[in-house]
Amino acid sequence: MNDEKTFRMSSTLFVFYVIVVIVAAGATGFFGNLGIFVAAVVIASIILVMLLVRFIFTSVTVADNGVDYKTGWLNTTLTQISYDKINTVDAFVSLWGGLLGYGTVKVFSGNDVEGIWFKGMEKPHELCKMIEDRVAEADKAGKAGSGPAIDPADEIAKLDKLRDDGTITEQEFEDKKKQLLNL
Image (cartoon, rainbow, N blue to C red; front, side):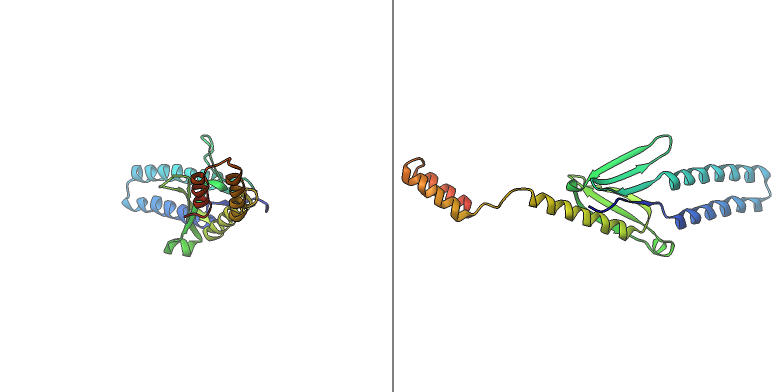
C-alpha cells in the first residue's frame, strides 16, 4: 500500500476563528466598561487556547491498516476505523469552507447510522478520495484472498457422480443443483 498521510484542521479556518474572537473581544471596548472588556479578553483568551489545542492536536491519518482520528491533548481520544469496516465516505464543503479551504468528511462504518465526522479538515475531497481508494484496495485484496471461485458445472458433475454411487438421493442432488445455479 501507499505511505500514510496525515490531515489536520485547516490553518485558514484556525486563523479565521482567531480573528473573529479577537474582533469580538475588542468590540466590547466600545461599551466603555472596563469590567466587560476585561471579561471579554479573558474569555477570548480561553477560547483561543482551546482553538490552538484543537488545531495542534486534531488529526486524521490515512494509514495502511485504517483511518486513525486523534483529538485532544490531556484527554486524548483515538478512533481507529479499519478499511474493511468502512461502508461509505462523504465530503461536505460549505460556501465558507470553499472560500477558506476546509470541509467535513463523514465516514460510515458497520451499522453506524450517524457516521464519524471529521470537521474543519484541510483538503476534505483529497481526504475522502484517499479513504475511498484504500477501502477499494482492501475490498480487492479481500476478494482476491477468498480462494478460487466455485464452478457450478464442476460441482454438479461431482454431485451427479455421488448420486450415481448412491451416496446422495435424487432429491438431495436436485436441491444442491438448484442452490448452485441460484434457482
